[in-house]
Image 1 (tube, helix red, strand yellow):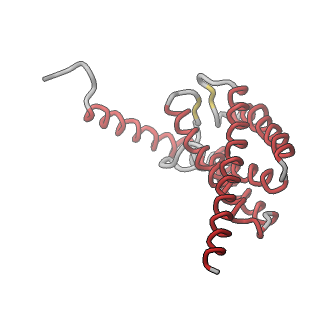
Image 2: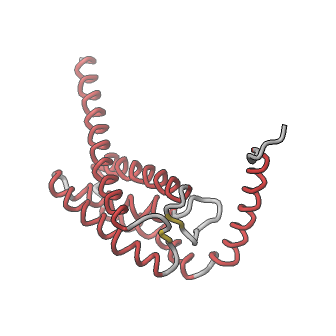
Length: 193
């Protein structure tokens, strides 16, 4: 029975065509371009610098915060790209999510720094607003100017709200996890005695 709707096979063939086009675009347009080199440096340098300043005694807590930020950033980026809210014309590698250097490096590293140095909720809130503003109203327009980011059905003000919620909710979740771990360790040590 033939329907007017695309079958799974039709979708798979379309994905194969898109994948071939994406590889060709990456190879001839992205690879070794100035934007590609920028993405490569942005994927490595922030962690090197972060390692120099991270509080090693709080490493697990701070890195947990960064990993959660990274996971949420990747998830939100994939949703935004798939819903055609925004797009990334350039990729570091054609087979990875669009902007790995931002989602796995720049956003988590910057947010780990404010998590480490802003211990009170008030100071963290102010720093989160400042970082959200920096990403939304300065970095995004720069990336647009250099054709590394495209807004399709999105606004910088939406990004500002999204980054702010990301940082605050990740801190709340991290603090809850850390308290839960310390609480269970403390109660476990009492039971063992």
